[in-house]
Image (cartoon, rainbow, N blue to C red; front, side, top):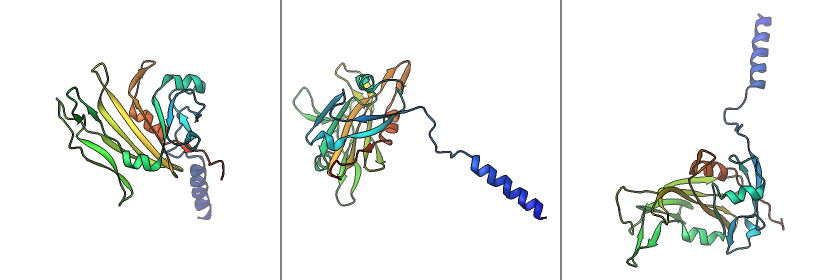
Length: 212
């Protein structure tokens, strides 16, 4: 009987040592860095060094950093803000129409609730429905050393009048916020979507402060 139990124990021990975790991501990727020296569209109201980050690029792993940032995909613009600015701004789709009136293209907007310390979706009173109803999807993000949100707009209107999937995000780290935006595009025969951007955002890690 002892022999049988020893065999069973060895079998399961061997199985558990060779099993691969289901949540392990085996997609090919490369680690990229973002700083004020990166060849991309960046702006800052704070010192951009406070928003230096590393992240995983799953889409163009064969490209150099310069080549990657020239693609402007999936993220085309990056902003380094003070966290208070990001909390106050939230995100909405408000714009001024041809008649000089402020209106929004989605029926909701994203705000930061100071009481609950959380991002929330609330109705936007400036929404003007034109055709199919449009709504921002709020996705909350929590990383190694940051937290924030991504808002996706499946009917973002471009200057030429066409609609694309667009997104905006903000990640809070200490007293700063790394925010940015992008649009769904076709690249090398495949569609780069907000889900690809979300995968990137979930991998972001802020660099340690130089004075720490």
